[in-house]
Picture 1 (cartoon, rainbow, N blue to C red):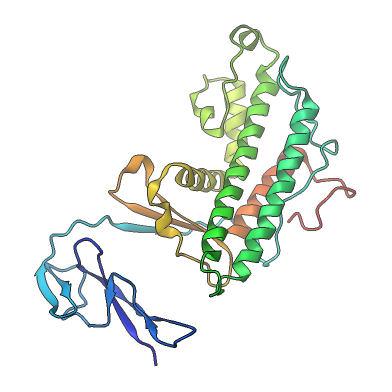
Picture 2: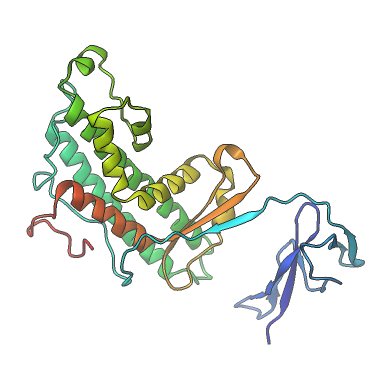
Length: 299
């Protein structure tokens, strides 16, 4: 028989909802969070003019006017269109097996340096994927309660690396088209350092080319950018740490641009879907890895 736990807001004590209580594996007793009680409220309504407010364990609940501010929550679960099989990994390239597409940065960096750095970054990303999968397999581990936090932070790192690779590809595409021009020689400024810089470019063939690249998979690029930005800048991200995919690894975050709490946008995307879209981008850019250097599963 399950035990119901009634949650209330930690600050204003108004009723938030009800869940089944977690059970302690050692004592078998119900685990009650600090902002919850076993006492049922007089009303389960959360949208009406009146709402239940928890006073204390001795007094219980009372009804009050629903004038408490709370940011609305929006759930966003984008699908990127990849087959989900449960098997995925980061595509791998030998540095001299297809990554020498770009000229490097004139007078600054040779092409092979970028190729070696990208190859190494892909190998590092695959290590993170393997770590995340292992940590996910231990998500019910009661011995180390930090396992889920390790998995979330490793996922953050993977997303950062994924966005970095894509930004560098767009930067190199710009250099490929503009690096030999008089304007670059005079200004010595790379105008596209990340994908978002494309929109700042003046109209022309280079901007059109980069926009066309981005439009080949616009949902993936939008989702990845939003997730990366939330991990890097949006303070409520920890509110998603408790969100764990039941059957599939998921990337979860809270997107609150510029600290605006008018809406809490919770994003959840399957990690496999994200990785396979990344791999598709790499194949479009560099072609299929050669058989000698292809990862066993580059889906």
